[in-house]
Every structure is written in structure tokens, then in C-alpha cells.
Image: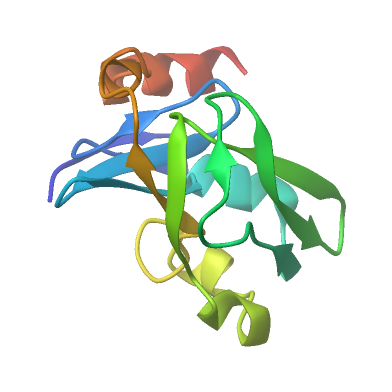
Length: 135
């Protein structure tokens, strides 16, 4: 898997990104969602999550989950519209997975996208890397 390094942060090139520091990855007709390496490092130690209900209809840009750290809490926004088809229940018992493996085991939820064009409008890895540099 290839990546772009921006200082201490990793941006994977196999997915798209939002302005709010979520990643979105197409897998078998669904879009898996998590927060970026940059976001988890800004939050510091994650101590809890709130996940959406499976079956919930969500709109692109809507807050649908939340993450809580020792430092702050943040909403997690849906990068695309559609139906939540899966949530990562492991995070209830192991919220630290968000810090340990933000692009893998630390994912939050998966959406069956109702408007596939929305995915194409998300930031490319290169655009997201530029955004991090500007922050």
C-alpha cells in the first residue's frame, strides 16, 4: 500500500479524504469510514466512541458518529450519503484502536453509498496532504 508522508503524518493513497479529516475507502460496494492519522494524533488518546445505528440513513456532511479523547471530543461526518450497513463494535471495548491503527482496525462505520459521485468529489490523497501542510 503506498502512502504520502507529511511530517509525522501518513496519508494512504488507496482512499479519499474529507476536509474534516475522515477517510473513505470503497470496498465491495460500500464505503468504509474512519479518521485520519493526522486527526487521531491531534486528538491524542481516544477513550470512547459513539457509532451510528446500522440501517440509519445518512447524508454527506452530516455528523453521524463521535470520538472522545482525553483532550476533546469530535464529531465524525459521513463522507457520502447512504445507509449505514456496518459499525466497528470492537471500538466500544477497544477505542485505542483508533490511535493504534487508524487506517485499519480503527475504522468507524461503512455506508452503502446512494450517490457514488459524492465519493469522487472527496479530496484525493495529494489534496489532503496539501491540506495538512497548510494546517
